[in-house]
Image (cartoon, rainbow, N blue to C red; front, side):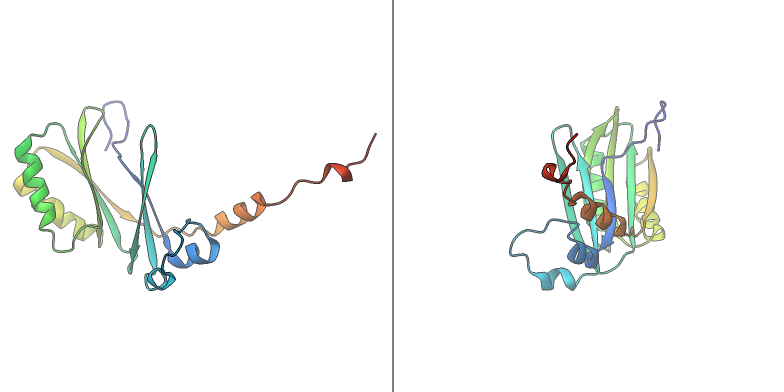
Amino acid sequence: MEDQNGAVHRLTRHLLWTSKETLEQSLLPLPVGLNREFITKHKYILGIFAPSKEFLKVTAYFLDSSEVAKVTFVFDKIDDDIVKRVSLVIKEVPKSPIHVSGFCMMRDKYVYELYLKGTKADAAKIVAVVQKHASSFQTRIEEIRLKELSGAREARVAGRAKPPSRARQAKP
């Protein structure tokens, strides 16, 4: 969804990758003492990246399926009643959401993002339920596709190459 100036309303960015790539290529720094068995029993990792002026919040969700959809709701106006109704509807979703942003103001609009396990069709059902309880909003549904991170390994390895020693350089 774009506003009058063509700017896209988006609070977060996302990336979905296999946990195998993280373990084999160390592409996601993992906390010391994290149980490797926990990670290996999940096949995928969904990373949610929420940028701010002063920080980048990164949240990693370990998943067993690569079927993930994102719904973005954009409201022109909200009030306490709309916030309550939308929150209650989302709370009652049969497949519990992976991640919700809550309402955030962006470019004079109120944006609410929801990531869920499932397909675009599953997300469309949620939108239909929200439409019964709140009106006057726009939505965008995205299917989050699996991304292979193999190119990052070559970049990481290349970044470790040592520059030639000054002692070995030919003198004029």
